[in-house]
Image (cartoon, rainbow, N blue to C red):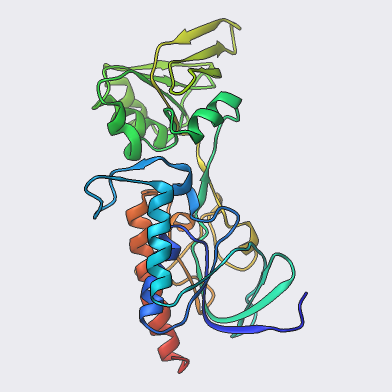
Length: 316
């Protein structure tokens, strides 16, 4: 570890919409924030092609372009953006200690955790390839369902979120195939009934995706019935994954309160955590909405909460 320890007023961990929105507000409040980008600078949106539902972009914007816009805006007000990965924290004292890339120690009066969450994928080569080129593989029906209006699609998942996304897609698409790996849903009975009562959703139990067809866009998927071992093909132009997200909160275990899935807990009407001076925003604390605009909004809230807390401590 380096001998020189830097002391900051405001440290932001994560560089998605929550992190950059927090930085914009913190910088304008003269907190001189520093952002540590994390392993995926720009967050999940850098893996998204077109973003059409973020206010202020009437013609849409690609995910990477939007994150560059947000970074430039944060830097315009004096935010320092540093590439690195927070590998260790120590929140025992009034000054919060953070280590970057296992060697650089930073002390901060206020820490804003905006580390986000990562969608779970099947891990198929063609799934990854088509996802990365914007070819019709996605993990967000609310974000991307509009692009598949009037087309047949498939969705993989069995929980409440999967049922909700399937019914959302059913309003846009003539046919939605819902693929469930087991012989039953994991969703609540109410959500199951919603799916069962939607005539253009066809549920295929004991069914898995073994390949995604298409060179530049999805042209179909290959399925396997894991009970009968029968193979099949579905003629779809979109594949939606709703098999869960993993919040990027591992490094905070033992320090910050979190639920059984790893999502960080905060006060009901604040972004404050169980550790004074540590605030949370974005998808690492949100398993309900998971939208860029809600993440940005919570980043704003975290920065305002941090500023007020620092002022109350006589540190700003």
